Image (tube, rainbow, N blue to C red; front, side):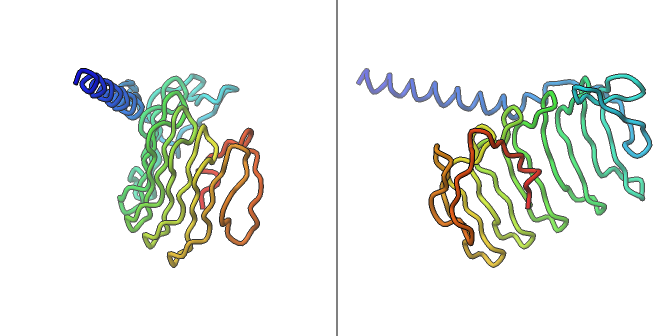
Length: 208
C-alpha cells in the first residue's frame, strides 16, 4: 500500500513539474515588459548592428514596430526589447483576419507559432524552444487537407515524417533515425542520408 501511495506521489510530482515547465515555456515572454513605443516600419529609418539588434535613430530600440496597409490599418505588430524580438508578434490580412501569431524571447523563437490562410483555414503550427524547432510541426493546404507532419529534435528533423498530396493521398511516410538515414516511403525520390548532426532546419525558410 505504501509503495502504491509513493508511486502515485512521484507521478503527481512529475506531472506538476512538466506542466510548470510547459507553462513557463509558453508564458515567459508575457512577463517581460516592453515599452509602449510605436514606430512605423514604412516611415522609420531602421538599421541593425553587428549583433543583429534593431537600431532606431542611432539607439538600440525597445518598443513595437508596426506595419500598415494602404488603408492605414495595422497589418503587422512586432515587439522588441533591447533590440531583439520579444513577446508576441502578430500579422493580419487586409480584411482584418489573423495571418500569423509568433512568440520570441531575446530574439529567439519560443512557444507555439501559428499561421492562417486568408480564408481562416490554419496554415501551420510549430513549436520552438530557445530558437530551435521541437516536437511535431504541422502544415496544411488551403483547403484544410493536412500537408505535412514533421517531428523535430533540437532543431533537426528526427523521427516520424508524413507528407500528403492535396487530394489527401499519402505521398511520403518515413522515419529519420540517429544515423541520419530515412527509413520508409520517401515519395518519388529514393530514401537518402542527411546529416542530422549539422543540419538545423528553420521551418519558415523551408515552408511550402
